[in-house]
Each structure stands twice: as structure tokens, then as C-alpha cells.
Length: 102
Image (cartoon, rainbow, N blue to C red; front, side):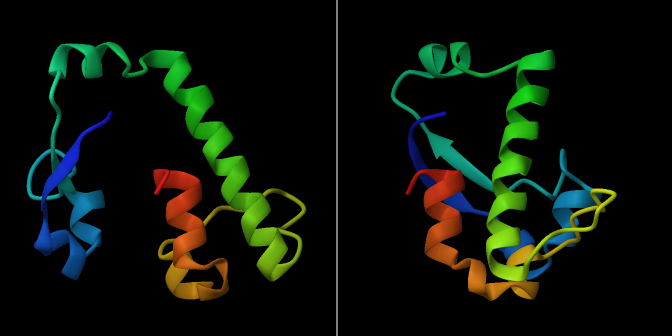
């Protein structure tokens, strides 16, 4: 979705667990102002398209982690929480550029 972030949820910034616990309540991340909401909504993915996209994003992140920390577990393992906090060598600007297009 394109637009301008107009507000960031400070509660989640201070305590990220809220986003996991209450994603449809106090766990919202930010508000976006978009000039054409109808066009923006048409671009949103649904069902299997969104799952395929998420899988691709996870693969990108796993490759980035391997570059910094070496190979992941042979069984695939699971990504933990606070990846950047545990692997700051990933580089914040690199992460935002890759996943947020900044």
C-alpha cells in the first residue's frame, strides 16, 4: 500500500509483544494516509497469493541471516523473535531497504 505514514503506535514500539498478542486491537503498527484508497485496496493480496509472497519474504530474510550468521539449522528451524536485536549485523538500513522499500 502506498502513502504517507501519519502515526506510529508508540505502545508497540516500546513493547513489540503487543503486536503479536493484540494485532486487531492495541497492536496496530501505524496509520497510512493514501491519496486513492480504492486503487490501494485493489493492490492488496488475498489468500494463496499472500501466502506465496510471505514465503518469498521469509526466504529473503533467511538468506540475509545466513550471510551474517552462517547456515541455518538443517531441519529449517524457526525464526526467533527480535531478529535484528539478536543479529544487528543484518543492518537496519539493509532490512528497511529490502522489506520496506526505503
